[in-house]
Image 1 (cartoon, one colour):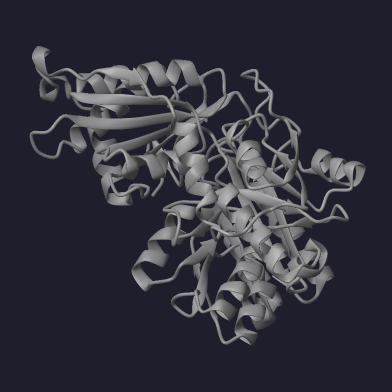
Image 2 (cartoon, helix red, strand yellow):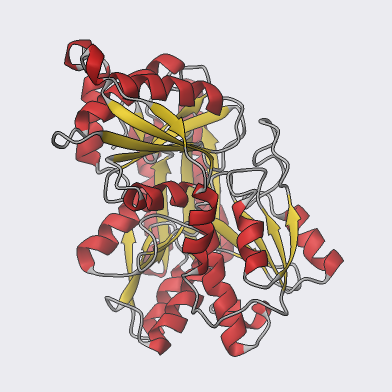
Length: 450
């Protein structure tokens, strides 16, 4: 679903510009609060955020809307998205809110909503909330004596750290491992280094000094060059890069090579299959995952289930078909034995567990398959619907014919940015490059003519 407000991962946009304004945030708080009234008990919300400057504005606006709907708000402060999902259940809240634009720059922000079960809201519930935003909902708000209260909650970092540590066997220690962790000046800047240190690792922490403007700035999972350099510099065994809200992870091996989400899923799936833990006979990922992952799983008689892009859709498929490993190439890894959403720290801990069990370097463990040549390019758009233009449709059809059964083509509008993403993969790298470039050129021409 992509409506007036909600995209593929909640509401997201430039801070202080529609739809990411204080007014919209307050109305989202009102609508979400009214949507999750369940009986006569005092209703509660857990509300976390990352480290963006605009988080203060959005947080206060949402608190006003939620309290107006009669919800008590527990303010968590800067904390990872998966911690919010966990605390919804731990604190028996009726709804969870995370204020974050994930891997985007500081000037963007977003609102992610979780139900009382800790899962992101379905399209249907988001549509219902969206339908309330432009209506006169003030008459449905709480009476003067039914308004909610807001308070800061202490100890939530410790709760999440203990939760993350318990995903490893009680007897397992990370002693002997030197780990560089890049927290992207984001929501995990306190909890990730602390959890790794408490587990016994020698920890080198990068980008743990947020100032409201430096979240994801040339750091974190989308800019791992600094992490790669530091791993070399301190001769670390592994590097871990999180994004701004810590729901995704990228690994760097001891040689500085990047290990993406596809390889992480392959490693965990193989390990869990061997230990009898893997459920459902496969893994869930999106249309963007590399064909090499599909072939690797096939060699183990496992199936790769593909969904549309968005970890929410991955989770929905996992729940519907009884699978417990899923994720995205970008590093959103969902391990449903532990979490209801992507969790960068917990996923990294599973990789570290494999290292400790097998006593082998990351470079040997993580290269599970040779990726099929894949190319992704983005085309910026400012309006119109270029994918509906006849020349674009013809170019796409021609590209699918040229790739044949030995390749794949995925073209989709981004749900979080004004982009059209063009991805192709196949065994012939020159053909893949030609196909993508041809389609990008045609879309760009259609965009210019609009």
